[in-house]
Image (cartoon, rainbow, N blue to C red):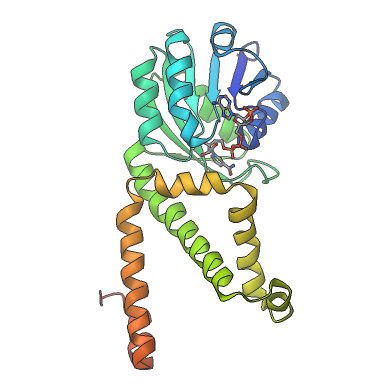
Length: 255
Ligand SMILES: NC(=O)c1ccc[n+]([C@@H]2O[C@H](COP(=O)([O-])OP(=O)(O)OC[C@H]3O[C@@H](n4cnc5c(N)ncnc54)[C@H](OP(=O)(O)O)[C@@H]3O)[C@@H](O)[C@H]2O)c1
């Protein structure tokens, strides 16, 4: 298997580059491409047995529609997108190859795969599925098998809810007009930890977080619940309802 070549579309970017490095350390030849660099999509499909898509979420559908028809049936088309329903459906519709939806549940800042969760949505074929799971598990990764639908449902809670909360926090702090240096001078350890996450969301890759929230259809209902929760909390604050607030935190029965 080591003689196969792997192509990563988006392989010079964050998570694509990370996976490229992983495959290279395993002894594979890896080709990375971007919009203006590396092999064309048809060249990549012609020489690579495994083609991996690691481009921004809003570009994924177009890339699948371009590369999918070029894939041979004995090859693997796989994506790394943070959402799974739409990309897996598109990969199946546009190709005759084996198809796997993959979502690494970590960012390119982690030093190794050891102990990290990787969601795998098997979609078509089993040969490459075995190769991939053995490789990832061999590097210490924890495989989480899922359907695309269940994955997106889980990501509405794990990612969309958390990130909307962080964005709301950042925008609210900005609205207060408080000076960041002054906030830092008065900060607690919890506040500083939250600020580190906030900086990542606002500065490193805001497009990724916007896509994770907006493009997941399952995120709407959980964000609505979050909004209702904040409204109820506000009512308690206005009423000075300390006992009610404690009671709500202590029981999960009250809506
Ligand atoms: N970053 C994370 O923490 C993380 C974790 C898990 C999954 N993911 C998923 O991985 C994917 C990539 O995210 P990322 O954060 O790694 O993005 P990124 O850092 O912005 O990198 C994206 C790469 O895609 C290339 N690219 C952009 N548009 C393209 C197009 N139309 N055709 C071909 N190449 C294109 C870019 O290269 P050029 O500018 O040279 O075109 C760049 O190298 C997303 O689907 C995301 O949901 C990300």
